[in-house]
Length: 446
Picture 1: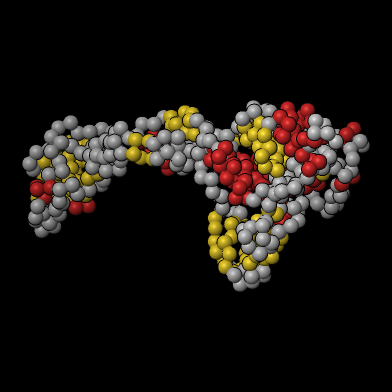
Picture 2: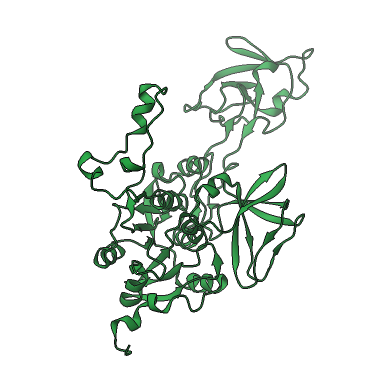
């Protein structure tokens, strides 16, 4: 075959002559990632978004001194020495309510009836709680003394004007929105969420949740009618079911990837399955998006078109990674956007997403590149065996505080991840871990 032959550039003809170490793949990836620009969103749409700039308050919160107790606004000096046996009479000259201030000035021997949250009247410097008074219509008797500023909330004690309230990069929580509202923000500048096109290929696939009749067992006859109806909700149309190959399988990766993208702050876009046709796959890969995830077609089989297309029309610097599962993973660039070639086997797809695609989506959206998994350290119940030169992703269960390995291989067994509580990473410079060894476990559940 000559060098000019079209097959000479076919990555499928070369196979995986070399698998890129994970650390080198991550180094290349990090060099390609750039945070997306900012956009303004309303406060009601800002929960969970990432701040693009520091937020500084231009006002004091609260903006005025206010009462922190129901009682009487007084001059503290007028209560000095007051007690149950030494009542001190004060003239009540008005009332202050939340949202309605007393307009006068409190002079010596005077008091203003006040409710919690109401502005402090001029001249008063303390609040005498109601339980320490005996009140009449125009007089109140102090039965105890208060010191200056007692039960008074000062202007700016929550947030001072000029203070930086939140730093750029913060993921906004519900209580943060309350603070932003309190300092006058109706909109906030956040990092734009990455738009992620999910391209699921494979002529063997059916739409998610859809089974051909030949693969469906009859529902139990003792189930109530409502349950039996639910079991057949996702049937293929009668005309289609007759023609469909009974060996086709429902798409598992599409729903999983969409949920992972949303978890990591991206916007998943998946109009439907893409057939194993080069033109259709290339068109899908060129959809308007910030990131493209191709599930299936990443290996070196004759129907694995995605890698060939990326190599021909873009840039494919990484194809094949020294890890298990998900060694057929590829990464490259097409029309200036990142493209991830994720294996079709579900566990491999999940692993490759977590190591590479998720990292890019989080960073582009202004989030931490690190995994969003809680971590614990616990002893191994049984050994985990690996080989030097390959990173392993081992699914594990936690039983009585010990780590029980489930699987490293079995890339098609997605249920191994649902039975697992998390996973352990065996680095490529290790032959594994011995039983009893403390290992770091990344837990799927928050």
